[in-house]
Image 1 (spheres, helix red, strand yellow):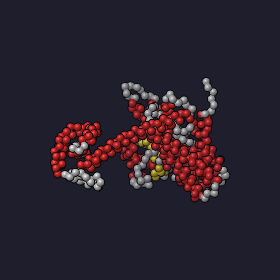
Image 2 (cartoon, chains in turn yellow, red):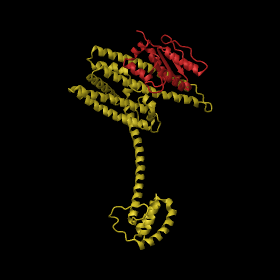
Image 3 (cartoon, helix red, strand yellow):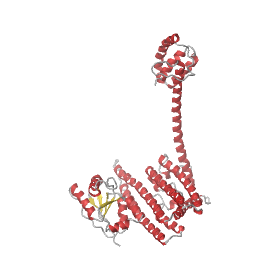
Image 4 (cartoon, helix red, strand yellow):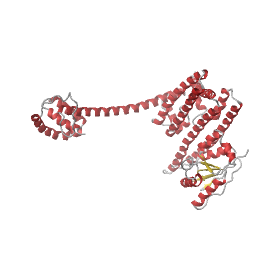
Length: 365
Length: 135
C-alpha cells in the first residue's frame, strides 16, 4: 500500500503551513510502519523538491474539502489536504479493523471457555458433585482442555430443551382446545422435527467426542439411569407410554405391541454388536506388550474400533427416530399429540426427579 | 477371502465353501452365492455392524450366510457386486456399501434400511416373499 509514503509526500508539502501537525503524523506513522523508516528519509528529500515546485505552480488549496472527491490515481490532481486526509482515514480505518478483529477473536475464545466452565459447574452441581477441585472435569473426557464441539452441543442442547418446554405448553393448550386436525398435524410435525434436530445435534457431537454422547453426559442423573447407547431405549419407552394414551382401538393396540417387539429385536441386535465391539477392543488392548514402542500398532487398532462407536450412536438414534415415526403412523393426529406430550413430560419428570435427588437433605459426616 | 462359520445360535446356516486361488474365482463365487440364497449378508471382516445385521436377521428366524471380505478386497467386491447384481445404476445410485443385505438375489440395503423396514413392519413380509421365512 502506498498510503504511508504518499502521506509523507503530502505532509512534506504541508510542512510550510503546519509543522506540528506534520510531526505528530510522522510519529504516528513511525509507530505503525516501522519498516518504512529507512524509506521515509529519501521521500522527505524528494518531497522538498516537489514542495518548491508546488508552491510556485499551484493555487492555495481551497474549496477541495467541500466538493466531492476528484480522485485520479495516476496524476496528483487531488489537493494535498484531501489526499492526506484520505490516506489518514484509510490507515486509521485499517488499524481499527485489525484491532477490532483481534479483540473479537479473543472475546470469542474467552466466551466459549467461560460457557464451558459454567456448564461444567452447573452440571456438576446438578449431580451433587463437589465442584472446585477440578476432579469433576474428568467426566467430560477432555482433561482440562476445551472441546469446542461438545461446548457447542451443550449450548445447543440447552436451547433445545427450552424450545421443547415451550412446545409442551403449546401442545397442552392445543389438546384442551378444539383445534382442527390440520393445524394439530402441523404442531405434531413440528415436535417430530424437533426430535430430528436433537438426533443431528447428537450425531455432530459424537464426531467430536463419542464417549461423551455414549455416556449421556448432558443428561441428568435419573435420565442416565435408563441410558442405552446414548439415549432412551425405544421398547422401554413404549411400554411406559402406550398405556397412557388409551383409549386405543384393538388394531392400534396390536400394532403398538408389534412395534414394541420390533424395537426389542432391533435393540438386541445392536446390543450384541456393542458386546462384540467391547470384546474386540479388549482383545486389541489386552495383550499389548510395551516393547520399545511396538504397542503402538495395537493402539491404532483399538482407535479404529472406537470409531465404530460413532456408528452405533447413529444407528441407535435412527432406531429412536423410526420408532417415533411409526407411532405417528399407527395413531391418529390427536393421539400422536397425546403420545408426544406423554413422552416429553416423562423426560421432564425425570429431570425434575434428578434435581430433587441432588438436593435431598443429606446427613453430614 | 474367507467365509465365517456360523456360531450355532439357532440352526446353523448353510456355510458354502468359499475361498479360492484367484480373485476372479472368488468374486464369481460371491455373485453366485448372492443369487442362490434368499437372504445373504456381505460385510467387512471385523465390522461390528455386520454382526448387528446378522443378529437382527437371526432374531427373526432367518439364518443367512455371512460372507466376510478383507478390507483390502472391499473395493473390488463392492464394484463387482455393483456391476453384476445392482446393475450399475441401482436405485441406490451408488456403489454397494458394507454391510450389505441381499434379498432374493437383489441388493436390499444396509443396516439402516434393515432397521427402518423392520420397525415399519415391512421386513418380515419381504423375507417371507423371498422364501427366507416360513410361518
